[in-house]
Image (cartoon, rainbow, N blue to C red; front, side, top):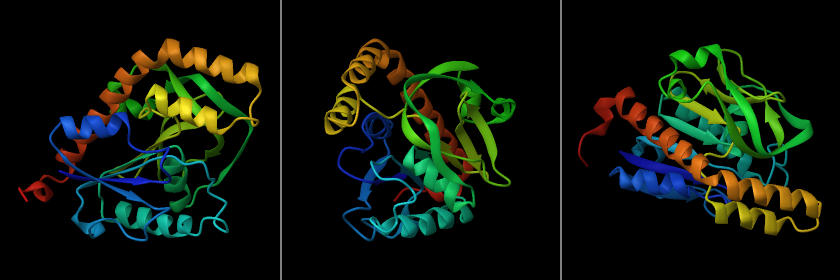
Length: 239
């Protein structure tokens, strides 16, 4: 497949997912929305799409006008049934593009948070492969409601953690794509915004949990790629 990665800045790239995509033999190109108005090639030429996180929020279009353009791109991908996997800000944008409310949480979710699969996940081609309950790495202050007609797949005590929009678009609030160094860079960029004890707690959790979390992330990425190939096999003729 030809895979596109949509990113929102240099610190929120595909990381582990990029490795998996290339290891599995797919073509992989990146589109930084903060730097370019268009992807490297016409969007119609991509067989599947990933959308990653960002330091900005969905309600900051006045500072980042490309956020509104991204919503249009996501609506088009969903309408054309292009396999799509969105993470954190990307998932919030997916939900918002489908008409859902995205708003600030009463309390941020930071660190590993216990989550549970919803009943609907048992029949989902991707999330049915995950444990019924696991600890998911979260770093977010906003969360999304489930759009009308969409399906909730994973939930924490505070909010929806994963959903499916239509038949081919998935979004997760947690971060299955990260490497340890990537999250360390995020924490370093937030000096003064977090209490020192909170930063130390997060670093300790990361050091202890990143190995198992990376294994789950790689499995989740491969589950999506395998599902994407099955969803529209006619699109994947040799190029």
